Length: 536
Image (cartoon, rainbow, N blue to C red; front, side):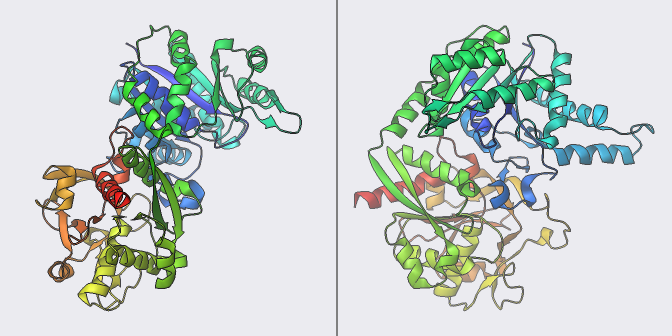
């Protein structure tokens, strides 16, 4: 079949959950046997989010091919169980950079370079490239930001043009809006959605489907008003009420026959969806039999989106034990005193130290890791979390006083963590780290090997520093096992402390490959240890 395009825009306010709506629709279509590719088009001028603060933009999600992308790509992968790449995240900065490079090379033959047609053509080329590269049945394109934002206008204009080129029946527009509830009058208000659709229409796009975010059920009367004033069929006014778990959203949309409405508008026959395992997953989520309290110790804890893949991966592993996960956020800056670290961890059943950059909060991370190691608390370190585990062990067990990473102390006497050789002469920050998928060889008989059940694995990386091989033997002689290394043995990928039930840390980011129906092996191993402690 010819690839069909579905465009998802948002109005009224930002952070409505357009990404979850796009991912949920992707799930409903893949459950029907269709192939789906989802793209995120972001209006900001950054070339990618790789250099942006997590406080600004949340987590940077890394794909197999080494692209640093928007966190929504994590949702896309988790919901549709696919692996995406560089083509799936396009920013204004990337588009403008590409056009300017072409202009400098003379590719426009002396023409005046303008937003229309040059910028819009470049945007459309990225939409077409996804279809050419993956040959899917559907390309779902989410446009970041809110309708009416100046920076988003080139994307909206590109969509208007592209829809005309595709012809009738080959694309639809879905607009996600807010229907706010006013407690003083006890009413749901449709006017903001009406105005948002009016703005979208003024740009030449009439949405075929309206997805209405709401905290209260929307009565039929209000749905009829939205249908009338927004010129969409009543069946295409879809309620998207606040739910306990994001994984409930596909089933809520399926109950309102959203996928059927989409297929009907695109002149395609519906198929029976196979959602049995997803339904079972949601039942487990809604009816947990126990609760695991897990600490995440980092420096971006005021914004949970900074660690969203870590949180979701913990939940995925918890579901296997019919357990809900209660996260205790620990600001590592508050744990620079060991007594405070002990106090912070006294009521939790496991510890995760995630990735990050910079010296702020490092001493606190070392303290919580030391506590977990000494008390045999299940521990999982990710990227920087592994480097901190090595530093802590070197200081407190090996006896290398004040051992450190050259990232934090260039003149440290014992640089057990050092910048990677290929990173030493790199200039610039964006897209220059060790990024994407690399192989790792596992040591037989270790916890890591048992967790994966295979000798060679592939995981996604995002780092500049690594374990200094000059100290590897000394550290291993003192009892810490390097259970995973790069195929040539030059890079330490996984460390573990065999005396503990689960003290494992990895240089890569396993959270990027976890799925709700297929939890990641390292998170499963961690949660198995937590469950055992919970039983005890």
